[in-house]
Image (cartoon, helix red, strand yellow):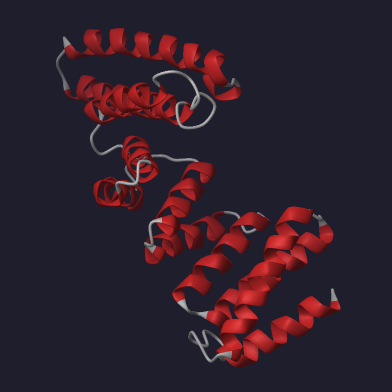
Amino acid sequence: LAQIQQGVTALKCYRQGLALMEEALKTVAGLEGAGDAKTLRTIRVEMASGYASVAELFVTDLCDENGAEKECEKAVGAALRACSQSPEANYAAANLRFIQGRGKDAAPHLGTCVNALKSGEFSSTYEFRMNVAQLCFEMGNIEAALDITEGLLEEDNRIVQTWYFAAMCYFRAGDLGTANEYLQRAVAMLKKSPQRELMAACEDLHREITKAAAQGGGSSGGGGAGGSGEGGAEGMEQE
């Protein structure tokens, strides 16, 4: 229910749910057996996710509330205590530290988050993994951003924003040929379902790719940086 609410209403729902999970945790913790241990871990993972969602509220919908940063810190701490390896908890910690301008403190948490996703031990949504990839990009870990993004494209190649983001990643990595290839895929999709702001962003990225190719920068990817850049330019001009 909290996931379809916003602001204070969502916060109330999350806190009610977390209170119930706290009670369930106490009950299961008093039992013995392998099945109970598995249940205990499941509850802890869900609690970590819940506290991470609370933290997210305090850097988005509730960021202007009094004491928002303090409440976010509390939620992040609770998430990590619930499950220190949780991708959601570590993403929340990394995101908060990055917002605070503490990149060195953010990096270990982001690394733990990425490794947790790779392990396959935790379920995660497409949207969450996209958020992780974007934070990796912002923090300069382009390799991790690309690894996650390519996985998302394999899972669902119908989302134009993912193609555009992948193109940005390849451009940042210096692979102009692949960047242009992915960008043209995004543009082709936007022709069928126009999104003005995203098309404008694609045009901006195309200009950057063309400029870099003309200067001889980057790698060719599949077909040569200069050749790919020029071919892409012609395609965009025809649009």
